[in-house]
Length: 399
Image (cartoon, rainbow, N blue to C red; front, side):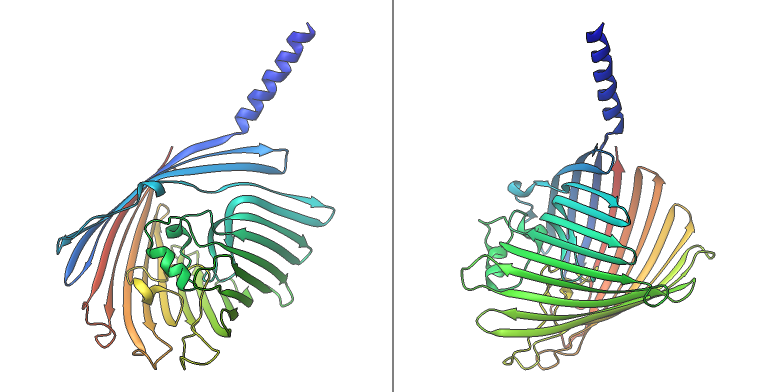
């Protein structure tokens, strides 16, 4: 009888644990047409991500996910060689971490360990999935956070790290698939309600170059910020970044960003957002002030690509309007003007981009999105093309 009772308790525990599991597969298909007035290309990307999440205690969980993917770029006119994602990079580990939150009296504690998301406040200097740990404390109106991460176990095309010539050489080397080896440390402090409905904060980020081929480049960033709500419909944020760096000599740079948003939930959730972002250029070419260098070089535009889409030597002014005509349909239109603040080496005005996106959720687990846009460059900036354009249709299914 004791054995039967024990087996029933064990079986009941297994059933309860299995009932708490979350698992599934996310499938996505993206087909794009793009080109210029002189070229026409097709791009294709398919991804299948499997994930599982199960609880650990009553305050944490383990999340495991991996992805199989295919992507290709096919030049149609003029004809060229197809560029396919290397087979070695077709499978990747995505978010895989142990995370949770708990409280000790009035102090909240949050953490994540494993391959997890790291970012500083602006999302323009560091953003991505890397290996490491994050921890945070919440004490009344104060949030404190610490993060330590390593970049060298992710694919180089995913990490998008281009800080110095060693990184550029690694990106061009087809024999190397992993990202440059860098260690980063992030400390954050945020203070709420010093001014009603506002938050002040400071992020301190440092990255250390562990790869020495031509030379090592270390950088540090101090990022003060403020964001808040003016009234029911208006909110805003401002951040600034002071960068210091060391390679063969000391250097520094600056960046900042301002965003103001109007939101009216009573009129089809209408949202109007204006943004102004600036990253310094290498003005004199010889002094200590250089072009701003982010840790991760994420694309800042929808259509424009290459160096002009990187958050370095860049000044952008943008306006985005979005509305939800019906609950399942979201539409937005964006305009952005790009300029180079370093007018010594290039024309100040680079070009303008106009893009639009329409997304529709057919069911909770099935959605589609169509994106299109054009980029018109300043003829004095480039003569390679008069206009660059793109369209993209994406489907996402969760099983």
